[in-house]
Image 1 (cartoon, rainbow, N blue to C red):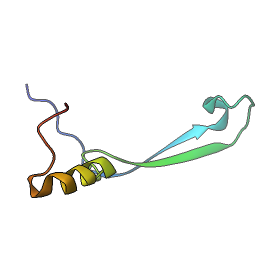
Image 2: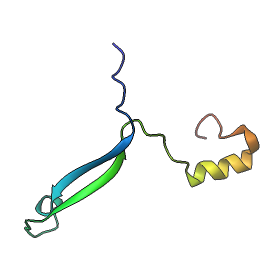
Image 3: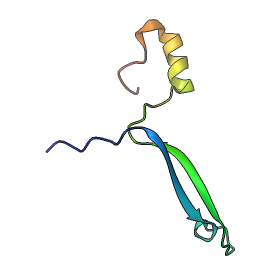
Length: 65
């Protein structure tokens, strides 16, 4: 069977209790972490942009050295 499709790209959030973060003290407070999740396209990296500029319009090579 084919692997399940990734959910669409979107903003996700998760609430975590401060005590669960392992900071060394108990607290009733929570922290909300927000992040992009799902089938999001990867943002361009500095390495990829620099390599593309060096190689010209050919783009990055086929793999690592």
